[in-house]
Length: 193
Image (cartoon, rainbow, N blue to C red; front, side, top):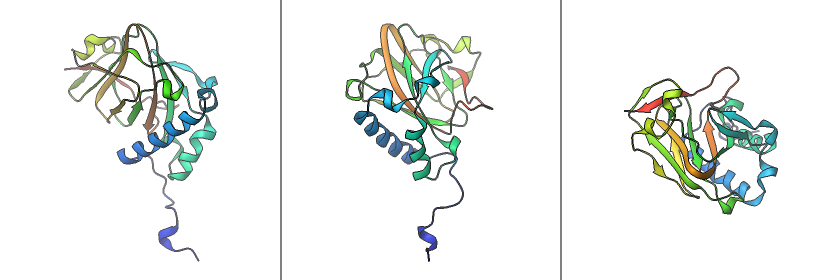
């Protein structure tokens, strides 16, 4: 007979807590440090997403997280983001999701960031997507990011990433729930006030 306390709850979690997001991030980065990127990401999913390159983690890497933490399938997405030279940045908000973005570098088998910046700001206004592009949309709030940094993007807080001039940046975006769903894109263009 199984005791009530040892059974998993039948209700699937639809949005993970900040603590669980941190734990999943730690576990995933450990996987990425042991396996080369081509064995972790499904390169057939690569697409342009609001001006930057995004590729999803392989399902056989994601599924154990879903099962271990009793998550609904849409409760977690892990993707790698590549920002190329001269990407102006897009300030935006996720009204539902939150995300933790560890910045990758040589330790994980990727080039270290060069001329890379991020922004996280609570005071913002909605704008058109074209008005959300560029450093001007952040009014001097951008800060430099380096390999090993983690940028937390809370729900309903403006944020963005950019690479100035000849630069590059790779980071993992671990988000809950999934921002880019077939029926809903949890992306709202923003400008910092």
